[in-house]
Image (tube, rainbow, N blue to C red; front, top):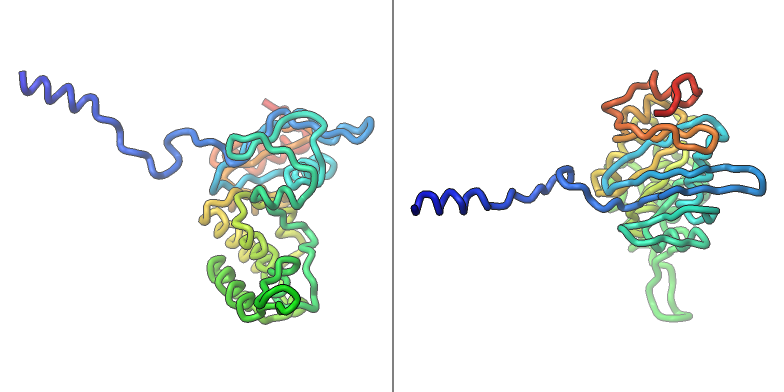
Length: 272
């Protein structure tokens, strides 16, 4: 009797919690449902749905004009969707301008990086968000605090970029580190990256991919627009393929191949 009772209790024990984040389905940090965007008669994005989870890198691929940039600009608050719903952490997300996206924890690293060459790395990181000391009209820029915090961020990113170096003297990889460091000031949940490895050397590409891995290690979701197939297959967890404004595939990297993605981009392989 006692043995039977013990067995029943054992059978009712709950399973250990899955701390990996991979067992149970989590609420996506970002979810797009049936998003469309048209400019007059031009349908730039048509009925696209996908989600991003914390600590996930998703490659967004497609030919020029496929709708990738328009889709990212809607997530970044530059455009409002014509139709569809965006949710962040399970709550409806409506934005009218990029500053609102930043308040929600969405940052974007543009292809041109938008850096000031005549400023230092730290000054670029804090541009528009400078730290000050003092009160009211008697406050001054707190350069020591900005240099210290910038150094901490570069250390977190495992970047060799130095806060006091001028941006104009930096390599492409170091400039990307400065642009990515800016996203760390706002405790971003999502970082959107537009062609971060375009027009830089092979060594610098490796540096940038490592920076993307650091963001993932900090639990940040990364959406990566890229035409470089090797980069996407090196760093991404999933790849989303767009063609003529539509999503034609959403695949785990481990379950796809560069040849398949190329076929989906060109239309040689039809969408599932």
